[in-house]
Image 1: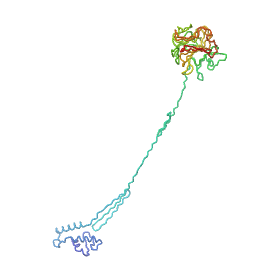
Image 2: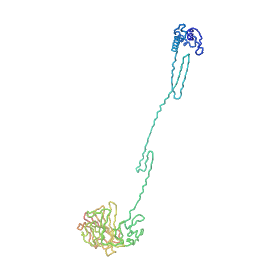
Image 3: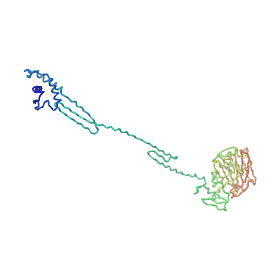
Image 4: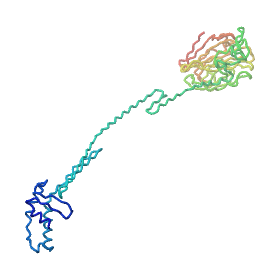
Length: 409
């Protein structure tokens, strides 16, 4: 209270006050280094009501305490306060904080500056994907190319040629052909053995003066020739293509040992006669109907096979025979049917020991006809020929479509 009063009464002059509160001296002269502050304090203090200087006020009573509190509140309200302003700037990499503290009397000013810098970088990423697919296709599909894997496949084709077995009675030569060692002039008895030019044929595997078989690759009628004698018999065969006479078509035929081929209704009758013959009920070709015979131990037989190529094949039956009771009397002829000429048959003659004097030559549809006759027991009806004959001496052609026949040679 003493200090406050001293301050009141010394406001217009220079006065030194000793403050007992903190033990420090403070210059409150009107010439203070902070005139504004001093002036404000001076003015404010002048407005404080003067407390009468009585004995009661000097005492440490309640009114005195209230005055002190009032003065303290007033001073507190008069204290200038500086608001601290903080500016913050953020930088991603560096933060700087600056603090300045200024203290004047009871006033404190704190200034904090924070600078933050934010840098944002926008990054645009562009991804380009290019897909190229190449497919290579070959016609034989031997090479396949894909994007990830290339696979090459090589296929080797192995062709195995299997030769058909040679027909019965034939053997295969080194060149691959099939030969009959019993009748082949150039492989007579063994492969590669050639008969001398003084012989006309290979008969039963031996060079001979007997007629030679003309059909290449023909096979013998099963069971005929070689080791047995054959007389008055016939055998039915399956054929590689159909043959016909008088409109009758069949893929099988019966070969008769007496010089005939029957398409149906065959007979083993050996006694020839005029046509039509009741002994044969079906279509029959009478190439040389006589009492013929096959002798064992010779190449005599009936051979059959085909010549030409589809659709112009020929079905050939070749008779190489002797006469009953006359092993040296040779009868050699062919009966031929044509794939491309139905209902036509031809007879080609190479040798006939009696010239047809005891034979019937012709064709018939059935036992009652119709029929066509070339000769019956007529001498000289066909050339005699010879064992060395390799081409026909005469050919007879019967056309059952037209009911006619013709001769050539």
